[in-house]
Amino acid sequence: MAVDHVSALKRSRAKLIEQRRVLVKRDCSSDRNEGYSERIVAIQAAIEATDRAILDEETALTQLVEASVAAE
Image 1 (cartoon, one colour):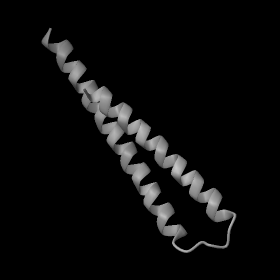
Image 2 (cartoon, rainbow, N blue to C red):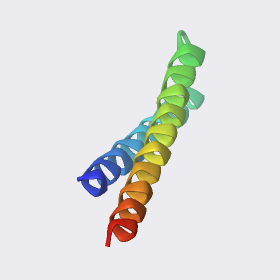
Image 3 (cartoon, rainbow, N blue to C red):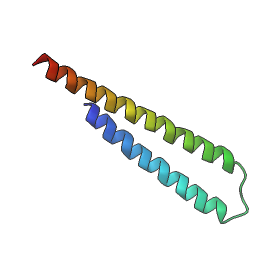
Image 4 (tube, one colour):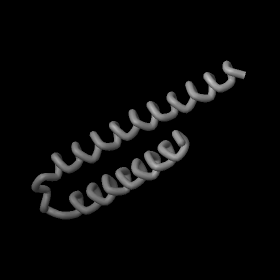
């Protein structure tokens, strides 16, 4: 189950990175930079939160496997 969560989180992270790249490309090529910093900061914060969630799920999965092995 944790594996499914990790996979979903990694897909979400990839989408966030793509959003950041599109934003940078679009806003760097135009004079319309209103709110640019706020959008970049929000996307980057979401990426970092997703990274923490991935680490948390991977840690939980490792603990689950270790507990299962210890129980045998």
